[in-house]
Image (cartoon, rainbow, N blue to C red; front, top):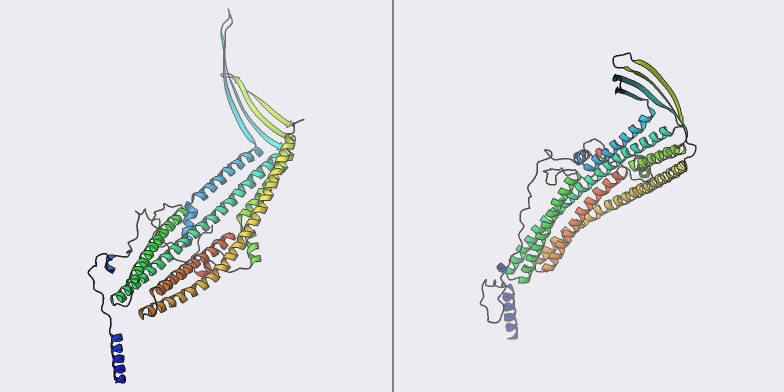
Length: 475
């Protein structure tokens, strides 16, 4: 009898375990003083909206633009470059003014004189005369004072021309940084779009399991919250894309809402990464060092000129003039002069000029050392950043693969009621974090390569075109 009762109980337990619970009714009566039952239709998650599009300006070019073409446009339009070119023109004009003192100076004059006089008791007299002259003067010798002044001005002009190269190098890097920042923002938008799609799928799964009676309503609410959070992140990343595009256009010297289509490309790999080679190349190519050396040479010429401040100067002049009455004969006269000017006492002018010139020379030498240390530090830092970025790309790529497997496992366990919705959310957060890190590491790798090329003053060198990028004018 006991065996029969045991088997009956066992069969009833098995039948009860196989019976699926019925879905909860959509509307249940509310008892007084108690909260109504949860209805997933009472609340809604955020829905992705279309991107905000501001009114666009005219298109700068037709078709996708490569990075080389973007830099070429910036070199043509960027106001910083135009400003440095204006400074070069100004210095060139000042050099021309000083150089003119070494050349013969030709001058002429024409005078007309009308003289009328009348004495008491005499007839009035009127005289009209002309006086025309032509002269030439030339500095013969001043102990190279003027030559040194001209040389100083010309070297300063050359230093400004090297500054133009520096500005072009900086503009190229600025465009590259804005370009890769835009690509980074676009990658993050793709990560957010994928995250929104996954969160929506997880929400559909939570709703299905809740309606089947297998999960609690809290899973649906939390899934709706994660969808709304993902939508917020998507909107924020889309805004970053718009801002990054405007920054790129500004770096190019264009209206911030100009229509511009860009091609997607990565910064090619650097061929040489040996620190002695990089240091030597930077020392030879960086225009800052060239400009600093030209400033030293210019200040040395200024010091040489200061030593001859009050030395004698020998000049010569010659001229011919015609003078006579208007209706009479013009009588010529020839004038030849040889002049020597010197100061017996200058009140300390020469000593003061020498001291000032020595101070400028010391400043120029210190500036050269400062630029040299800066270039060396920039090369070393860029190389260090590049080596770390290469490692980070590899590690973050593996993290994406691991996180992708983790989300598959978590969703599968959740469907089988072996895991919680928290496990799914944690796995999805890991996917977003790994994908974000991977997108950021790709951008850091591109930026590190671009910065190292900038440190070498060769933004499109060191194997850039070996990767199939089209050549263009070198900044």
